[in-house]
Length: 323
Image (cartoon, rainbow, N blue to C red):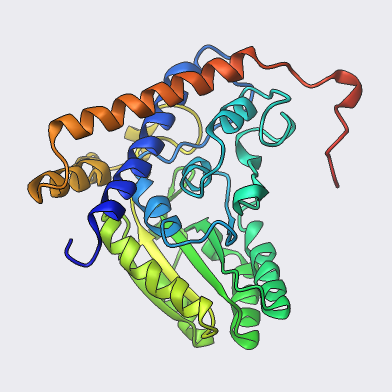
């Protein structure tokens, strides 16, 4: 706690709480069947998005995946535009054409999500090459899951990033499951952090439920990239509380061990950080209540805005689409 200021600590808590409450509200209202898009919730993984993005400048680039709500919020994306996109409205950040898996807000450096596993990795690497050539000082960060670490394009991208000494940080959010398949059923060696070392890329394994650890390690990697010292890789281990897609996890008993579930629930990243801040006298009950009330107001306003926004004009449905 001593290495990070009070203001940064409170901001990290704010971001994590905002992500958690937004996801819970989406889950609560999804059954109304007005959000006509698949949703992939990041409940339990909030510390990773918050800890990493807190070290980025507005102009830096973030590339995301299908589970990108937290990344979008942490990078400063417009909450009203995000929620409107879930409702496929014209006021959405992708004009209602993309839905949950295709959020974008270039005004804050959030360069988009991809529904293709590993799809953002080579694009982020290309953006880092552009930053190197243009000498614009930007750092690219790309978030992806443990399943994407099995894609050949990651190894091709890391090789190129190392060869060209690119300003990029690869963030693997290892939540141990690809849909319902555990990592041990898919990977001969489950230490993802060792793989970048084949390309002489510095890497480390991070407790993704500890926001201070994520913040500290990602700061080192981002500072390293910005100073011209090349790429880094972080394997952040957390736990996906919900199912692969949609609210809840009705199948959890068929593929998750109950003991595993219980142990990870004890590692709630938001609760752990809240307890730490209260013990350090950085937060008290009144402050927590004020933070939550403000976020609840923002969320209510965002959903009201989304529900009252117009759908895209049928005559313009192909506008803004590329392929």
